Image 1 (cartoon, rainbow, N blue to C red):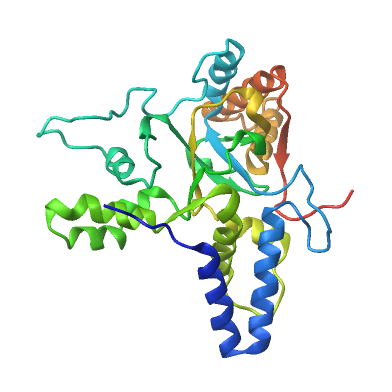
Image 2 (tube, helix red, strand yellow):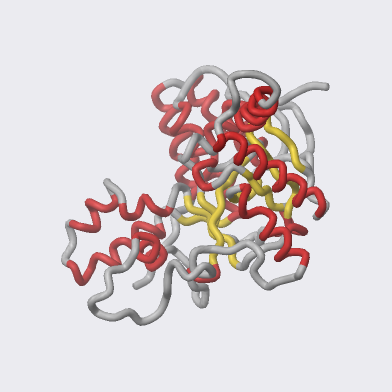
Length: 311
């Protein structure tokens, strides 16, 4: 079956046109705000004439601090897959399955992913599009930020979490079909979510931000755009081919909440009330993770605000 990806620029143009039809001034703000999102994604401020190579959209992955030292050690030893996915860890499998085998959710989703010919799920490494936040903390308290050079221009980006393919309402569309057609229908739905890193991420981000913040006769700020591009666990998903090493990292990020909690835990070591054991363990693991990353030459910082700051 042939699947056609969505033309994100056309979708964006139609959104501006619709806004202008209802209110010319609202249409003007919509167009300006869309450009603002695209500028921020490209690493430009609202009044800047050029991009800042240290800013802009990045692919990030989150990893639990306890696993960071092993990732750093594998990178130092130049292992082929220092950062591992579920297939590397033997959680999932690909290929022919026994007729009685019940696929896991991850396998069902991966079977539907809008991949190019020759690309298989076992060689995919999932991440999120992020501006200046800490990624998806559900997956780990350490956010690894990949350099732009580590992401190929034709890397597939989905406009949402791929697990939405097995959740309502997409699940309901698939379930309404006969069993022998459901896999094809799910894949067709997946192709509607597909874009490419270089050419589509700006338009995809603009559509997402507009959907989150809505039409308004006010300019979006950098902080609002940053929070809307990756809002909690609502994110644009990156399907990177091949694993990566610490050399591929621009930096690692810790959240301000974790930094504050670790500082409070340290303060309570010398006074009452005594910190909880799990707080001490988390603090210790994050300190070990930070040291391992710094030993590999990776910058580590605490994210304090999604907006612009001035020294």
